[in-house]
View 1 (cartoon, rainbow, N blue to C red):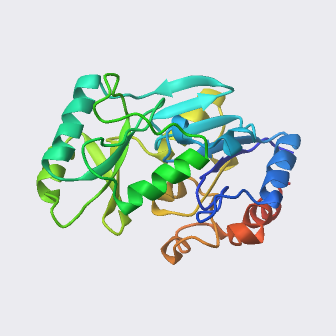
View 2 (view 1 turned 90 degrees about the vertical axis):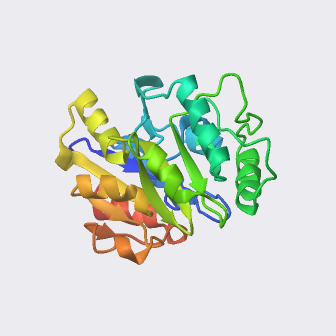
Length: 263
């Protein structure tokens, strides 16, 4: 059997969105795929710091983190993109100036604004992170503020146009819906992360597979012909991918890997 490289999103793909559970069939299928000699990678918008221990315990061969800004293989970083401390401070200053809620995300920390009350979304995310063993004590005023990307929410008082005018010379954005945006340095995506792994390991594109469920997976779906959407994905993804598997709760990972004879 020819070795394949399979790239998995986390939320809604490996782990359920609502109660953050990894189905037993998923764990079993991942182990079987590795036994069959295939390489398994996480490909996520989360930075490495924000990946739950339960995911890391599955012993993936590598991680494409922060939409391609940090890439690891066999426990070693093979690519890193960080903003300078000065740039990070400038960005959080603009977020405050334009009244935008955000979570800056770095390889070693995520940061919460210590000067404003937490919104409903931030409370839920902070509680989720805590349950997943992720440190949430760092703030925007931390001396070592250092991040590569961030997510943000627009409210009725936000100066959205002014902020985008400031940020879009150097960053791209992903509209996640409901006034929620993911901001990533220009030229970086889940697709560029896959390309980096390909070059590092000399893997052909036809031997790569991508599995996800949301619109930040679009770059890797458009890059890879063997693209797989979870059954719980937004229906807009179904016509873009080459295969739609079952929902995560209905053993969707196992179903997809069997369909492509990976297990």
